[in-house]
Amino acid sequence: MSVTTEHRTFEKIYAEVQQFYARHIHLMDEGRAEEAAMTFTEDASLVSPPKITEPVRGRDELAVGLRKAADELDAEGIRYRRCHTMMTVEPQPDGGLFVRAYVQVVRTPRGGEAKLHAMCVCEDVLVREKGELRVRRRVVTRDDCL
Image (cartoon, rainbow, N blue to C red):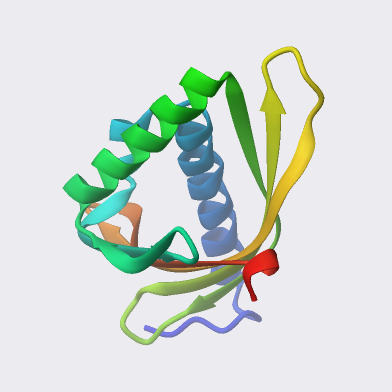
């Protein structure tokens, strides 16, 4: 079922997507890698050049990568905060959602000053599994890598 942006239901979908990202990003920022991985589908894929040029495929592989990244940041004494600044949500005919968001990544060393680390565009395909939104496909493009 396709929902236009004029439809009252769209407001509920948009709010649900915002809530999904608030939780999803919080889990990643807190280093809760295994829980963050559960916000992806089992067959999810992620590409984020230049670091990740070949797709990371599957929830298990994503969990390993998220854990490694969280452990490296923790060892360096670095905290990331990711912030969606603007987002479009396009309901798809198959019931999925195409989401395009601008994301700022702020990097703060323990006891240091927060600095903008990256500005990105994140394009996700979200699907519903057991009533919950999950990321099926993610492509992240950093502005400094264009």
